[in-house]
Length: 320
Image 1 (cartoon, rainbow, N blue to C red):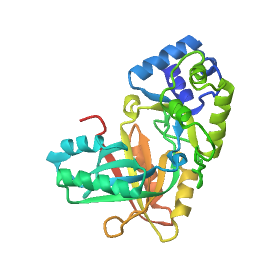
Image 2 (image 1 turned 45 degrees about the horizontal axis):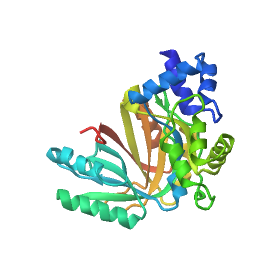
Image 3 (image 1 turned 90 degrees about the vertical axis):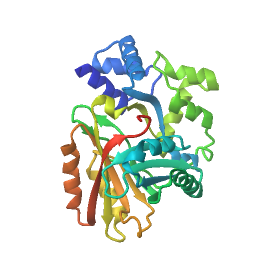
């Protein structure tokens, strides 16, 4: 088990950008290259690893907009509503959460905020829902989801997401190559060679490109993405924060720098008549008290007026 944990940690945090990454990972933790590849294939087949590859910053596409949507859904309609949400283009996360008004929360991306509102309106018309809130993204301060298997809580380095991210089009990068690296990376002795043969670019050039895009913020990282439920991280909370006027940026930078357990920290555009929390952060853990401790600390920060944690009750995405 110890070597399995070490392997999953290496694949998340220290994936080698080299021609033989799985051999290098094996050398670090005392496994052969073949043993690493066999284990990684097993993890992928059994859903422990969701994927290995580029973690694209979607702002680099220069056309994607995003929003968090909260919906009030009656208990008897949760299953049918969740199914319709999951069928919408651009939906990534969909959770049932603890909140006295809005209990179903999902994220959605599209090419414009106007189109997001149109899709949400279509959903509420289909389901006869009356009460919902749409919170477009104003600024992302952090988005880096990694799980420390030894600490039992999410953890990632305190790096603030860059304010300005160059578009892949500006950088004249082949979007097909990047999307291929994002979705289709497979464990083998020379995994980058598959992309080299397919796209006609030398392996070394592909690796150098990934390093450059990561430095510029167009790629947030490269490595394994784990399924939290498969590794025992059954708890997560979306912690909403009402902040003193003009202090949101200061607070978010503070949170990102001092609380590495945070996976997301995002400022939202709000409608004060329906929603008063300008920003939120997320933490994942094996135990609820690991999250509660960070919530308690956030309440003590001087610019915070109110903290409201929305703990997850169920993952509605693909599990209904």
